[in-house]
Image (cartoon, rainbow, N blue to C red; front, side, top):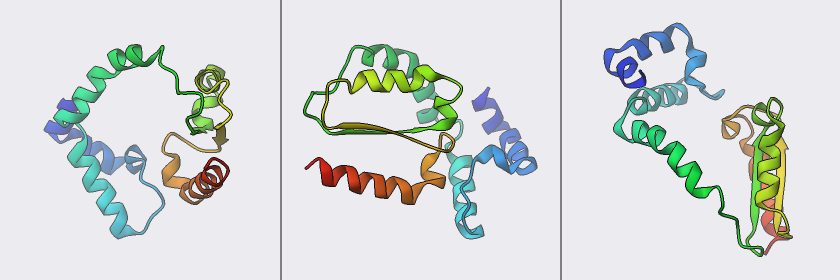
Length: 133
């Protein structure tokens, strides 16, 4: 369906009618146009289609994997994921359980936290790296 929407031009029409579909961060017009261009270029590409097809298999492969106990890990989760599904935070807590160099932080926002919380993410990362050298 995504490939059809992309190749037929319907995705472009839908995104023009409803710009929120592109999930563009609050940036100036020039940068917004670049985000739009990249979205139109990438949606329905072979790479994104293959990524979507591979997700179930890749999730299954990683289900039993855990981080080494001395490996620094910083998870930044969005409330858009944790609020409707409390297991999302639990899953991530379990992956870092017993690791004294791991932290999990929940930030107010949607899946694309880097669009709206870039400064906070940078500060949290600097703080984390300072404490986990």
